[in-house]
Image (cartoon, rainbow, N blue to C red; front, side, top):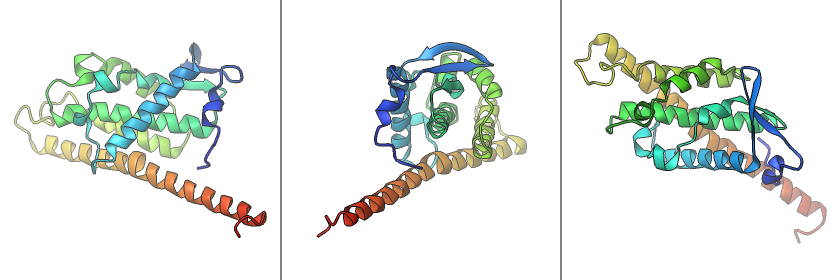
Length: 212
């Protein structure tokens, strides 16, 4: 991961054009301000998730905090660097995972159910073609969370049986894996990148004799 000191300039409307390209059709253009909002939401979701040891969707008020259809941003195309695209896709998959986990956390009515969003999310996840094996693993684990959100036995609203208990364990495993990959490892990688840049800066300072 390389640190870009000109993050905001990447999406300057004078230089770049980014579209939501679903099923090979460019549906609409994404403005610089819109994409900036998505990046801020992803940062917020990661930061808040770092307060826990696994995904905890019940701690988010999605209507007030994260109300955007993040699944649409899995399909960005145009003048966007691959590493930034992957960062956004991973962040959006994290938020979708948190939406699913809100159902399992059983805090009352859940955002995706009350807003009738399952159909839209299903279409997006099914259509999403990951760019790497890692993203494919992320998608597969998100799909595990999706698989049982309407299963009353897994949700413990009716008497669980051995099969539903096993399914619940699978949900917990996928949630833990996603937390490690999308939250823990993200911050570890970011820290390591800063350390690399710090060493480069120190080397430049030393080369100019400014360390004395």
